[in-house]
Length: 161
Image (cartoon, rainbow, N blue to C red):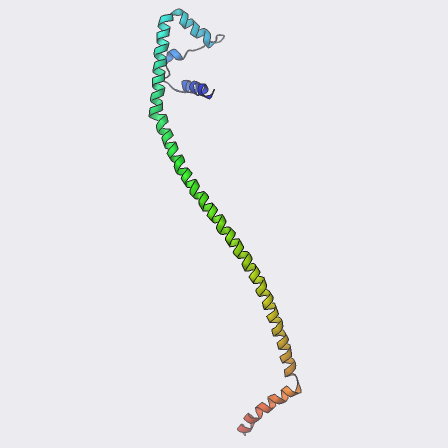
């Protein structure tokens, strides 16, 4: 029983625990032997003393509960409520971030596909340019081209003279 263990823990730690409810047990005796000895010594007085001490203990525990435990629990519950709200907001933000990440990944894939298409188009255009450059070079190396260049210069040469 965790409640009984808690009560024993409180009895060991606090200074206000009623002395009739706290007996010292000498070696070789049990707690029951000690209480039985007190009962036999003064049955009426012991009973009244134990009842009074128990009543005082219950009142003190109730006062401790009202003064310390309940306010502490209220603070903890308030903090838990705030923490729960913050956690819910964080979860919403995380879900939104995950959704945005999914969209971003999709956009990246689309961009990569578009990039591959553009790379292919660029490679084809570069091949065309190289082919046309070779054709132009071949055309410029022909006799007809050289003659046409010379013929184009003739009017300017004639004007100089």
